[in-house]
Image 1 (cartoon, helix red, strand yellow):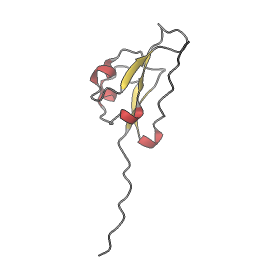
Image 2 (cartoon, rainbow, N blue to C red):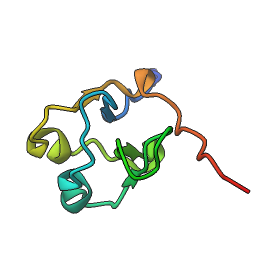
Image 3 (spheres, rainbow, N blue to C red):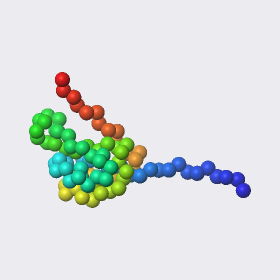
Image 4 (cartoon, rainbow, N blue to C red):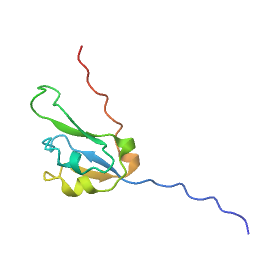
Length: 92
């Protein structure tokens, strides 16, 4: 019997945060088992509008952050649709 090629693995879903809904409450940061969520300040006013960001390569798709977010700001998407990690803004 000939061996058949295995279908490529699709991968686990990835968490994506909607920055318009995220309040930066950090509930997701505390629950993440792989510590892939960080709080970042808002782009215009560093002390206002904080949001959280997810390091996509480290996300294991466990759904815990999506389930616990009180603002429904986190959605799980197929890995192909997950955005790349945003480049951090640095100031001189």
